[in-house]
Amino acid sequence: MRIARLAFVIVTLAAARAAAAPTVERVVVVGRAAPGAPWTDAATEARQGDGAELAVVAIARDGRRRVVLADPAVAPLVLGGKPVRARAPLADLGAFAVRWSIVEPHGFRTRPSANGATTPFYSNVSTERGDFGRWLGYDRIEYFATEVRPWTDGAAGARIAAEVTSADPDAVQVPGVGTVRYQASLRLPSGEVVASPGVEAVDAFGLLPAVHRVSVRRGDDFVGWLSAYLLVPEVFGSAGGGKNHQTERFTGADCADVMVGARRRAGARLAYTSVAGLPKVARTIAAATTLDDAGRPARPITGVAPGDLIRIDYGGSLTGHTPRAWDHVAALWEDRSDPAGPAHGGPDGQLDGFDLVIHMGHPRLVIEPLAEQAPATVDVLRWK
Image 1 (cartoon, rainbow, N blue to C red):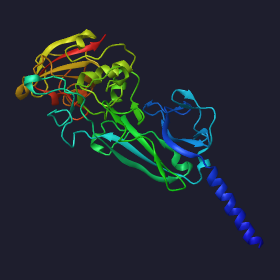
Image 2: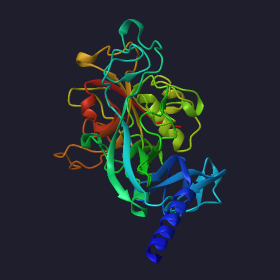
Image 3: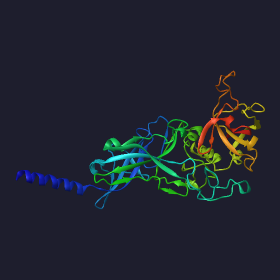
Image 4: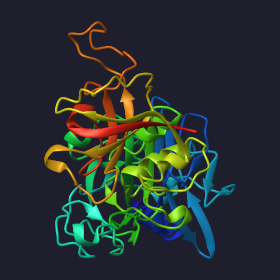
């Protein structure tokens, strides 16, 4: 009789606990840029090596009361720009597990364009010579998710390093640097799974800010912030108003917009513009000079430094590549020289085909020797 009563009490208590468990309405990914920094649902923007982290937070209802459930160590916590003062531990849910995935764009589209663009990469404007640059409407950027940490029970799964990675290892130019999104899935004791926003959370500009963005940069200057755009897809004619500009949201950029976007992030106040418009915000430090097939300039281009802008008008088989005076723009990433020359491959302050440049290629930002853009005519600008 006593055993039966004890069993009844245990079952009753378990049922009471289950009935008292908060009802999870949604899951949010939060991050902090470095140890000691606040945890927030805003994008995690960090410098390389700062130790950025992510954590899962559940928004639930306990009767009529809204409850924020998070690991006790996830503090201070800011959601929607407001500090969270009342909270409860995730353990109040009972036995839970968390799975983490990254959400990233397909580099090239996998299905017909939504706006009639004829390129394999995303484009908001026509690339046909007869009406080059004509607005087509926002292209549809395609996304996919990849599991990066399988289901892990309890607190061990609730936090993860905010790493920049990709399902395509060839897409990673600088290990740990660039932009990627994260999704967290929370499995409840009932077996129900509630996930933070993922591939389905899109609008005309691309993934919504609700899909947690992690952007890791090399530094706080222009070149540092430019590195944060690695893994961001090319969208020719990227556009949008204010904070919804695709470059501001790190959902897509073209060659000029990615330069302006990085400069804005580094603190400059300037509007988005085209390659032709860059001389309004940068001064010319080297006049137009031709590069031969190997990237050798017709006359020396001296005094260059990382971060200088290199405008490109393609020659050879790509002559007239676009109907514009300048086809493309890159930035000097690293000053290099001929390994057989006097600087033995090191910096020499001269621009030639050995130097590494960073530019929006097909289908994303790429770092490669300037010779890959030759033959061409180039000039060099420096931000004002």
